[in-house]
Image 1 (spheres, rainbow, N blue to C red):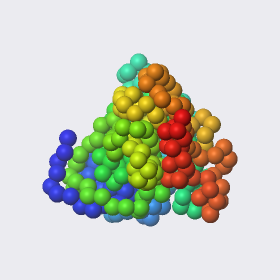
Image 2: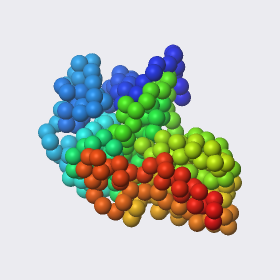
Image 3: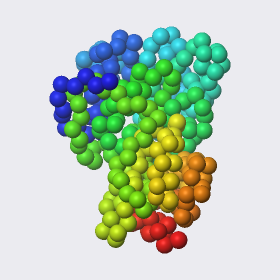
Image 4: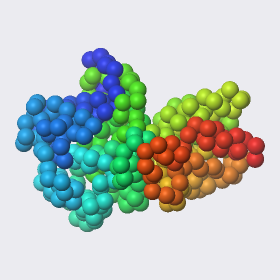
Length: 331
């Protein structure tokens, strides 16, 4: 659904703000809450101006207690509201993990469908912005392991706005991951009106016949740059932005890999236990006999995200992705 009256050039964080404003205006049951979301407009300004426009009953500054305000939001959702919680950084979500996985994700199953939890949890994530310890984690796989909660990770302003609107309208809980590194990295023309992008559908960013490159969040621009460099060497890549991490768009993954016969998966998170392993399993389950080479993974390393300048040595780079692409082509 699109209600469009023109476009405007927005960064990703501005697109998030625009989506929140539209939904607060349209639905009286939408409430925004979290640390510093009101007077300060959010640590990244994602909620800037919302308190002034909608008041302190709709935009609520909470105490510093992720478990407390996330638990309260679950109660609000059960009571008929559609709360949008902001966790300042994904690395701060761990105190609320029990509330999310024990209650929010299980409530529909626990009540045999009598109760749902229409809750959105927004969380900036990822490295590359020179943040202190615990601020730069990329632990999305902790949440893709639990059926009952959807996990969304847009890479562009257009997708961020449309997918946040879809998440708020979803009848079940959604973890909405926002790549900090991409917050103000570029602008994109975004419809001014309301539109929704279906959760669970990936997006093909580039067509190619030689190798499939799969990425999400802040790794999408990395994958695209690697594909552009590979094209100069005669390697033509399909590039897929997953957009939704749970449920995965298995059909898009299989269709692409069956066409190219080779795959490279790019994730910022640590190698062990990462989502790339699940994607690799999807490829083996659906496309094993189409493969011309083993699947390559380009990931972060199995260490805590390092401080400041050392982040550059931790994060996947276009050159590392290009090396993996060349490796599967040589096999």
